[in-house]
Image (cartoon, rainbow, N blue to C red):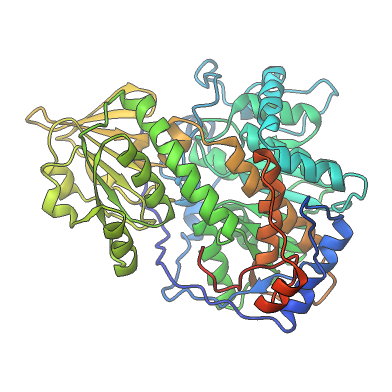
Length: 550
């Protein structure tokens, strides 16, 4: 049985994002011409790509965890081996990938206590078992087959080496799909050091495969809290290696460098962040006047919101539920908390299986959308005694409380598809009167004194990355966006970006989308000169204003 997860230190409040229009944006964008076959060299891309800065809308202070809790201690060996679950919000917001076929329990020795070298004699890495590299290589090759757009970008830009001289330190999930991104960055000229943003999400064989190629990877599945911060420190603090770019997922790497290595942080040329939590941390730094480098908000790009959140969750929610529960969902009473992009994807999938789906919402616009889509909008307390499945998708904290869990019926399923592990009050279930029974990987039965059982999936962490996999094609879209953002920030002339947080321009979202259309043999209709003049558009885009809601 796992130890209790610590309550998250970060409270995120939804806030609207207002785009600040940069001067002559249309003129800058018009330089980025994309043919129907999406042909564009990287020189044109870098010179034309000027992102749109955003106001810093955080209305409530985002409080970081206390330095003394995160940064002041390094563990004993005993502490390292205890798989503590009291880890920061962003590092536990999603869990281990079921796609990792290697069993991390085969060898109980901590990788930190091993001395390993790859075939080239290099030991600058720390993974579970370097001997798994061959198997990891096969997984990476499989992922490449469904990431054709990212591979296409790699081939087009490889000769120009737009990231030559870039030293990128990354903190993301380490999976086969992420490995394709990392190897693309290396092919474009970058040096990379990498660690995992989550203690469960690392595919050990993929980490070994990357280490075999010379990428310094410090990650393994099942890290302790102390291991997690040690791995981040090893990526940042390496003698003779000065990072100048950050690719982050959750903000832990950025926060660690800002707190522990301020002089190194000031020399960073750009930060690319893809998560809700990480973006809010950046806005918090910017609002306080402490963000001394430009940052790119990938999380709120159209290609991330619509594809990674909506379409990815529409498929992966069913995969995760079926693998863990084997439950028939036809006729089941399901409540989805939150009708944002993630909630919309989950509801569509469950409705198609015949589930009776209800929604909880705080936003009247999202609630009206749910009603128009045929869902009943309720308060959780109104239906808690009848519900069969609860799925949280809010990004908030304690949206399912202990009192509500007490009133659920026997055999109910509770899981989370939101960003953080704070949505379900799991900590309140770690009490003497309740018994936890692990029935299979990432599936716990929480047993009440009267014998009632509630099925808790992934200890309240992100279901799809914990209990199943996510579609490779969708990750190709996000990875391509990240790669282009890194290229732009690294090659941008001095003065183009201030010490602020920027959104990707519409033109860049359109370019990423166009790269992926060839997979479907899709053919775009082209505007005539007369039509373009009538609409007031450039024939090659952007086709929508920045305020357009897709």
